[in-house]
Length: 320
Image (cartoon, rainbow, N blue to C red):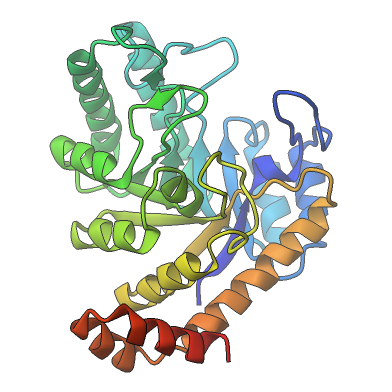
């Protein structure tokens, strides 16, 4: 069974462009709060924000019985790398990014985890003729190659997203990100698949997962949902129940069953503990509903490519 983690950024300081819903909290306050979340197994920690005192952080996590799913390296920083990090026109800035990731990789191993994930949100463009795409891909390939070669034992995961804060991000879809990983050619470079980002990018998440798995690049999973119009970071299954069940069906089919889910769900006006307790509860219920589907029968029905019969089987199994 996959363990459940929450990205620490969502345990405090929740805001949008208009208002702040939840006040900023220290990492100590976040971990203390997390002890009240039923069903939570650990954290996806944010680098560098959570790491002012690594020794204290390790003790707090260990003393409270939590694990670590991965380290989320923030590639956008206040006052730094404003025109992109991996694709910056400045060789000095790209070198800073490489050094920053090397330090994060060392820290991750010190924390007992070998997975780094990063969402290059600020690498992209807002207008036509704003970016030289040829140079941008070359810069990104060089930067990620240097990061990956530093330690092949640490997995580097690119979390793709279609937009925000850029009108169009460089790594917008599973296919684009997979093609980029293959162009870099590093065995330890793969993809974080955020189901909400997949939905926002007009993908069918189960199909995207199957494609990434065939290439050996499905490194990590984030679960949430949205209405396809914006990355609202909502409860799993809130808008796309059937797509979420199909995604879990394929996770089971492909063997992603003994790892971690991480959640970036925005609690907004609702109590944070209540939000993530619901996240854990709903995730286990979604797993249980998915398990009702007889995989042998469903696979046989899909061979016929008759959606009427497969839908009947799904509804009779899941919604009985």
